[in-house]
Image (cartoon, rainbow, N blue to C red; front, top):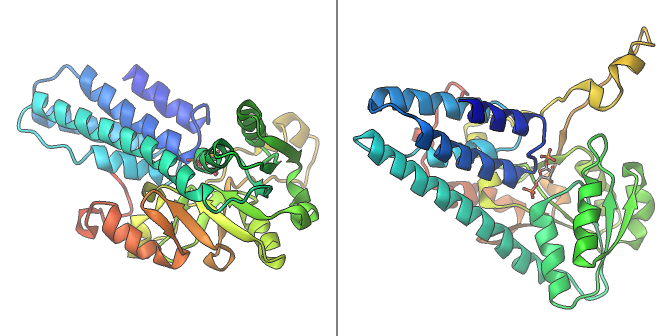
Length: 314
Ligand code: RI2
């Protein structure tokens, strides 16, 4: 229980972050938690697994990769606890391997859209987008990346470090400079936390203004997103919840306390309409956003009937 709670806390506080990474961490935690459970009673075991699943899903509401990963593992079968444990291990390991593979494939596919000499703008820190940069660079293409800081959590600093380690030329800019630099950009590549059935992309706050600026200057926007970032529940008409994080990430409580009439808003994500997106690069192919429905129905591996209708995952 202690380790389960620690993992949940690490996801909540963003010590473990990035939509793909939190999904893999949740799958691994369910596997390890199951392995640590002492009971031989299937009912008790299932109850504890459900609790763990619910706890992990509740940590961050927007990245749909998290409930998708949890749901994948929670499809386990088994008459006995031992059978259930080995089924969970198989499913979790499968999810993690598929996920790592997907990020690599997206890199290879996305790199085909990158030309030698391109300047590419990105936002926040996305493993899937970085995989494209790494792959293009490995193919010998000379690329320059313009990376935003991504306030308030400054994930842009992780991006510049990763790209620097790969030997890719990178320029760091403040988030509000995206339109100023758009004239120098050939292509925009960003990640996703969720893709809805109508092809809208939910990603780090600021993504939509970057996409809007790119649209205005007719620059292509590519979203790098594994299939498990597509949201099945949006087929049921649900909206993706946008996580509102602690105001202290923007302005310290002490500083805020100096004002009487000021409040702080800190949404972590925004929604980019499909009109501003040219292509979503998934591991099963580069698709127009309009094809999101097909990905949800054909590749996510479960039927709508399997979903709860009360809006709760577990
Ligand atoms: P990968 C991140 O969210 C960013 O919004 C990033 O674009 C997205 O997850 C996808 O990341 P956060 O966890 O899975 O920083 O491509 O809030 O790494």
